[in-house]
Image 1 (tube, one colour):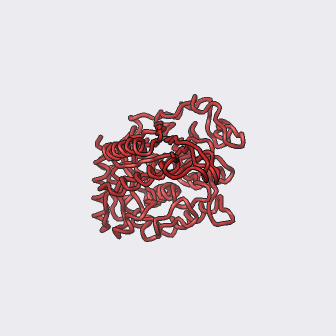
Image 2: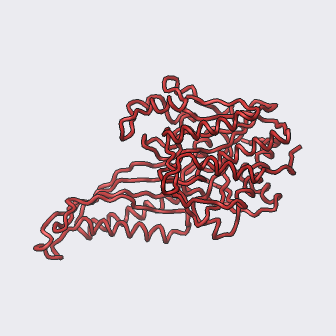
Image 3: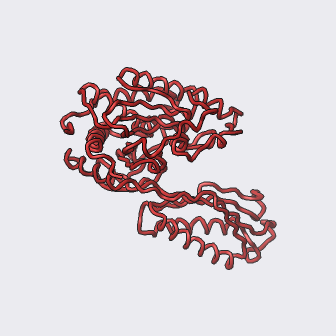
Length: 419
């Protein structure tokens, strides 16, 4: 029978957040705990020490993912966790909160002597964040077969550090890398807690977000070709200004995405390069990056279609050439309907309101979904801040989510992942 009366230890969880949050602190109060750095290796060691205090099988796989398995009666495990690496000058909640909440669940089960049908596995994935080696969601991609030994060869950071060497220092094994592979028979379900990294839960005044899908991401590289000329002697009617045309593209993307009926559809131009980039020369060529994110493939395609129309109209009207190259076309990944239903039911039974929302950032859950029914729970982010030292979530919200997280795991243990 599911234990609905047990609760996590709020003070202990808060202490863990503060303790792990000391690894990698810089002079500005942010965390520099990027993948496989000394600070991240120290944080890994701290986590393993905490896990070793419980009756768990703790090990590091070939991709340097940290696992801790608690015995159960059946074969397939219920796995939960996140990551402890950060972006440069990041905060102490992104990723880490999911791992620490998983640790607190195992502690709570241990001290209450709760036996589960399925083994419970904590996982701390390697290199979820964008990192100097250019391979984000490294650990979850590795175990799901989307990253292979060949992908590691020749990879270095800007200092010339080889990825295979850094991986080995973290406890991984580049030579036997593909031994980390897991399969659909290993897991019953996967559940991840993460901060929202936005303001939707705050605006709704709801403490629990139930994730419906991990965002799809489309990126393209655009080159706008005009004609360089003297900025003083070329009258306005005679100009073919690539930067002016690029500016129209940028504003049209903003207008299309702002007008789109779903707020989880967003578009960004985050990188711009102007040639010849001189004060007294009309720009002859501009390159820019375009990113579109959406909850469904249909949403992304609808925006792309309208944006392509704008490109064609601009070429004809401005006499510029516009060339595009697709750099990434990653489809959205839906979360398990069953896991979503269980989270909502457990939140309601715990007296907590919840809303469904799509994740507008990528997460390890997107790759775990190829192995097992997966779900995510979001904790509100104060002022919507993330990837910065000011990143924070209230302990009241953290406590509410942690208890719903615990209840959901125990409910999945009773009913299974229902593939």
